[in-house]
Image (cartoon, rainbow, N blue to C red):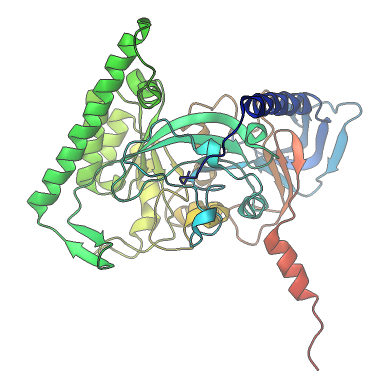
Length: 449
């Protein structure tokens, strides 16, 4: 969502563009309706809604029509012989910048952030690049859909609206499940350390000064919400000039649109929870490094958490080495709903959208440190779907749900497992990608003599 100089379009060009967009959306809907029926035959079905069983899955019109040992095959369907293989729900990365950043060091390929501190009107979907080379790499490892979230710079507070997208499609309209699935707010933390761009070094400030700066930012955010309330109330009058920022922000009032609060420290989580409760916001905590310290509060308030990368270093020097590994298990034991999002934070790994392909292994690390195996799978399938209000459409292999599935030769949490087929929106998605092409290219090079 970087700033660009707009082209000067004539009215005719604008009209043609609108017609093309409408036609594209209509074509995408028609293609889903006309999608060929699929039958996955002979696999062990891990529905996450019951015990695993060997059977078949019938897919038509982009939806799961039947699943199980007694499912009747559809006439004129394409049959995928999955004997000896396994079928799982497609994996869901609950927070990422996938499609917004190609190469982080090249500004022209980075659209994750926008200038300005408050940008509630901005939609991440408008900046997603469907032809990104990172998307096929991610898809080939079993991630079928993701929440693409905008980001902010150090001074930003409201980043904009996150989009829930399929990881297959020629256009964003084809990929979109929900163009606006949540508002993203970087909660103003009490930061005693900061990065000084003038000297390109880290600086420090007294705690009282840091607290005062944070409280001023909290008041500013509250003023924006108050303005959005007044704007919504005044919409009955024709004399009110349209304000896209307040119109977008008004969606979060009364819990209308979930709000992702991105923060990590215990004191900041507590202040964000109190703020959301006062303002009547439907809060989702993202990052949540210290969520284990306030797990009782999160469970009591029923605030779900999107955890960042578990394969991380401890945040504090005196933390045990396995602190990031154990957080998920402790939240589960306390009754806190949670999911994993590779873009929600973490102090180790490649970072950015390139981390999305490692999603199953972030959950696997938590499983190795106390999180039950099935809960680890649900944390990257059913849980994020329920957190974003889409539990009736995604997350389990159940008739009536969107057919986002993966066919594997083993447990997707194991790094040795291979993904044989990826089904997205009822269609077989291409698993070819840049990593595989480079692997094959250099694997077949002539040997030296």
